[in-house]
Image (cartoon, rainbow, N blue to C red; front, side, top):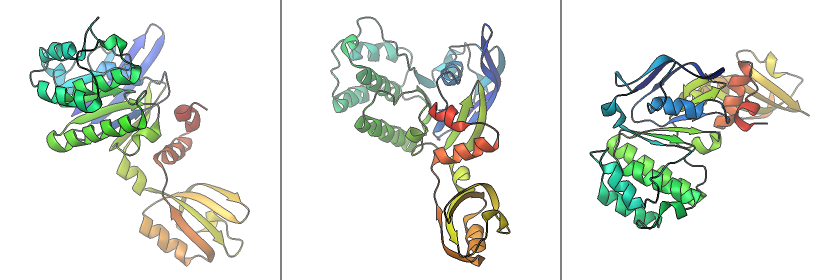
Length: 301
């Protein structure tokens, strides 16, 4: 397990991380979302021991990360600004990483290179952005670490490659308990693969919850009442927000699905339906309640 406690990082008068607390369980996909400048890259660089926190601590299974080589060998960091040795080929990079990761699997590396259609003897400087991202993923998976930290790793990959990388992550999670930590500005990208999501804004985590808990505890209802009833008049509903378009009422409520259905079935409605919320809709609702305009936070609107 990774634990960050009161993690704070400053750059001169800029507070990039402001007393961030986070717990990342093994064998799950932890998604960290937020716009550019929210602190995602700084958080990952602190996790990877590149930055020393100004305050607070980061531990992996109880051991501090910063300046601890043994702990650092347990994760692979895929930076958004990738670095490869000057003039190196993919095979050169594999040879280099074998010196640091004792479980590096050269045969798997070659196999994945072939499956992704990358030439192991071609200079990486001639690769496109997407090809470099693919190579970084291949190196990370071949290193057989417990954790992979991904900073906007899916940015620059085409849809087919995105799905291929997600499938590889899922395979390694099932086979050996890999824990990916993925930072992205795109919540839709993470929705189908994350077990836990944290929303980072201006250096602090606004919300951090398991996906299942988020989706089970909040629901959208659309209905037309047969009379002049307003949603707020329905006894027993914990309404977060509601809107009206003609006779159609749309409202978001907290609670268990079965209990909500029992309440609605007692009402005099022409029809009603419960509609699943996307993860983005859930975050928008939760953070609006907390007083934030999440559309600006997530979408940059």
